[in-house]
Amino acid sequence: MTRVRQGRPADEPALAGLQAHLHEPSSELLSHGLRTGDVLVSVADGTPVGYVVPVGGDGVHVAELVVHPDHRREGRAAELLRRVVDDADETVTLLVAPDNEPALELYRKLGFAVTGRRPGFYDDGDALAMARDPDENSGRDHEDAGEPTQDSGWDDE
Image 1 (tube, rainbow, N blue to C red):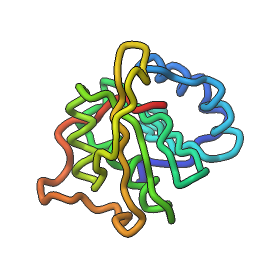
Image 2: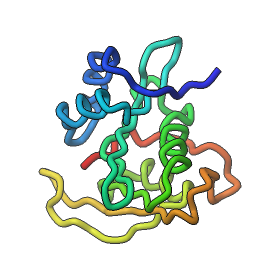
Image 3: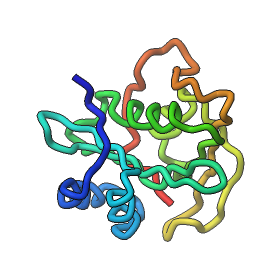
């Protein structure tokens, strides 16, 4: 049984609760993504425990990625991000705090590379911009290390 499915408006209360684990969440973005069918949800026993909000435009930007702390280290963030990467025909981008080592490790394993720095992006500091080119979009890890050891918990714009 797959652990990832398309989000639906009925998921909004559970996903809004997960936003407490994000650095700078956007309830409007989440609501819009659920209405348009863009949100992917990771479920455990039928309950949403993580989600990703990819936003199209000039490529695909991962605006929010979160997994509940009780379900981290299960490969859920990697699974959600792989689905976004596999579905993308364009460059996939995201932002991450420079000190979020678990997230950086995950993103590098999935083929993302740092492309720049946005000083003062977050209220408490800078953000690193990362990207993965379409020719890299196979969804496979770039290292033979298997599943990441820890999910990031957040990744937002």
